[in-house]
Length: 258
Ligand code: NAD
Image 1 (cartoon, protein in one colour):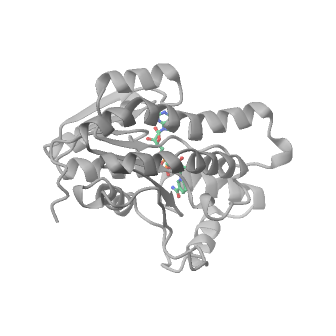
Image 2 (cartoon, rainbow, N blue to C red):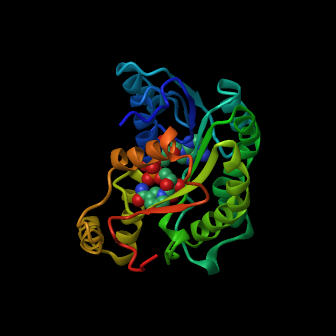
């Protein structure tokens, strides 16, 4: 299927690795021009070279997307994106009793305020031009809170609520806003969460991995490539009637009907 996004410009945040990289690769494969960012130059430039080797037009921007200066640099490189994929590193695990207000502010800044700022800066231009696709990478915790990730649970649900009305308002201008809720995907983030869980229980990380895989009906972790493919479809010309949705990709892990 031709997704109809050849030549569209896309910003993919936090895309040197993991889910962001999966999204950038899928959009680039469809012929979109991608502007990608991450804090570390080495991994970001390596990813940019990898994507460009397949013929894509890729602009890497080394920045921390959770800062105003970082977002300014990103938007300077791609001022009028047709596609925006919001993403950033997730907050650390821990226990409510140990979190400071500063921890909460950091989580909300990174995973709620940052995407809101980028949406605010880009959505009205998209509406004027009559095409836009915004995808917020959130978490399965929007459907069911994850005990070890309370900071993440709070910030993700905040973002989901914050854009729900706008996602309906923008639809008339062919601009959609959707959330994608990843379950467990095999990325550095998952490896570090599993490592911390292993340390807390004083057992090998391989045991945690095996337990987690066994709890997923698909019997495995997801891959960034399959995540990217779903996001690319949501960014396609064919997906203009899907907005304000929160789509779980978790190998069947969530037990509810809806
Ligand atoms: P990852 O650690 O594999 O990759 C994160 C990417 O983001 C890297 O490229 C990193 O350089 C970049 N990055 C991190 N903070 C940044 C910042 N402030 N500014 C710019 N770039 C930044 O992580 P991932 O697994 O791809 O996770 C992406 C998001 O999805 C995270 O918010 C994570 O919490 C969430 N998530 C992941 C999973 C999973 O199983 N992998 C599940 C649910 C939610």
